Image 1: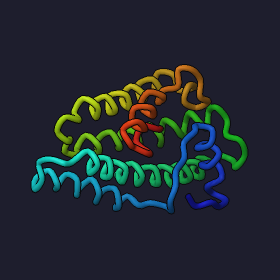
Image 2 (image 1 turned 90 degrees about the vertical axis):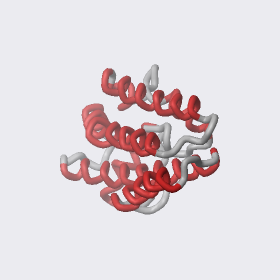
Image 3 (image 1 turned 30 degrees about the horizontal axis):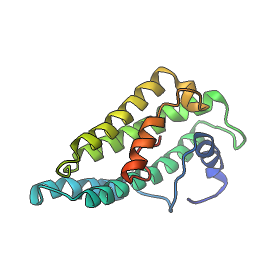
Length: 171
């Protein structure tokens, strides 16, 4: 993750949410290409091994996580959020405008990957728990802004982590 004046709030919000992003700034093209490659893979390969699926999924989610950090910084700058401790309103605004659409983007990209034989139920459970996380965060934005019980993405973080996914189940 790059650190700089404009990223300070993003780091603070990520810390508050328990979200960790790594690597340099991403670009829209990298995940779009990864998603396109995955989509193209369905034409030439009908199956992936579990490890191949996990590797592709981690690449998709890592790229999405990098884009999320960049979009958070841009959103905060555009809306004049200060570099101090974000307010409840600021956290909820970032979650609504950046975090939840980013989770939906990951769900869509993961759902486009060919599913390894015998892994359908586990992958479906991960994707459904991510969708439930979005629904819970939309219904109770305060629970994601300042993690309260129930934490909207706790189940998806657990399921994705147990499956070997590093950035996919978290907001």
